Length: 270
Length: 260
Image (cartoon, rainbow over all chains, first blue to last red; front, side, top):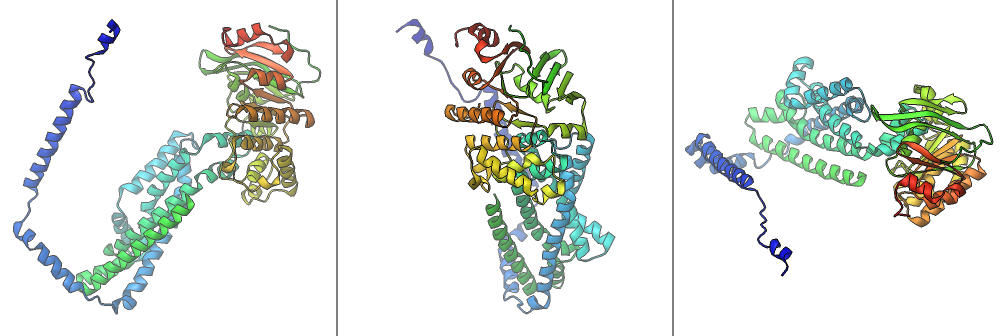
């Protein structure tokens, strides 16, 4: 063996440095302590916990059989209204969010103040839950579907705008530069350079938000903003559990169906 | 350094004392002055990072020069802004290394986008291009060796060589006074590179459009260009016909001898 071979022996390899090992152990300990501490402070009332299975079974017993006659009487029209709220709200949100997302996109808008303004609108829209928006709009427009449409729209601006703005920023700069080099005006660079690149993202985002909005608009009625939630609220208050059960089943079915439809459509687009 | 070639005709493009500094005090282009005749292929050769691409991009103002003038048929592009700049750009076609087609659009729409500076926005938006433009686009599809079957194919379904042919057709569609090509063959295999250079030489000849090409491949440059400009470190160190380009010039441009 040559001296250089000898010097190769005894070299060590370890996945973590001692500091990293110490940090990892510390994180495990802190996590364990946090779990124990929260279990001690959670205030579980044992009596309520013990008969929870019984209560659940009892609830289901009251719900079944469903009050099927209630569907044509009240649920159907409320369900259609929910669809309308979700769809109109989504369309309204897209109309308002699209121009803003161009303002927010770094590659399209050079002015930092305009970008900041668009980002600010997105953050304010997303930081408030749709139910809170609904409370506000019920106060402004009175109870009903209009308040629902606006709360869905305003809540969705941030979501659609932020995601679409990010899609715009990911557009390849090469084709844009090529169109600039042909002397195309800005409107044409937008329509023929950016739009074809971000179109799949646009439809994907719009469908995803519509899907979310159907679920969200189902509960808006709890604060009086129209849709199937109004019927649910009434049934809960009257303790008509057979109606509550039916409404929950209808919401569940509709959500599953829209999920299937939108994921099919999105797979076709992408 | 060889003497500047005498110009046979009024130059289509004159670059005067062009300087570009991305960082103040560190010029990438050091006061370049060049005249380009309204015909033939000019190849700009030089090592990577020497300012070839910056020079080409300054000409159509994709990059703004720090100082100097760019005279296209007497009009100073360096001073233009807004609509005037867009109108001037319509007269300069550009071919890119990465083709820069809009991938999700058809070949036809990519070629027609060479007319975006001319047609009214609503016509382009509704995809109602003038019939004359459509006829010309079909003729160009044949001329670049693709044929009308390609018209409805999506750009992302094409090979590299086919994409570059579409890119060239888009540039000619502008009816330009000048075509700039930024490393048009660097992403292509050797055989396709030769075909693309062949096509560009043919266009320069038959359509009488002068072409300025940035190119890494010295052999291709010598074979297809009527004039070679050698750059190094932001300066022009050779300017002459391909026959005049000798070993010592290449050593000066690229440095060293071993690679030759």
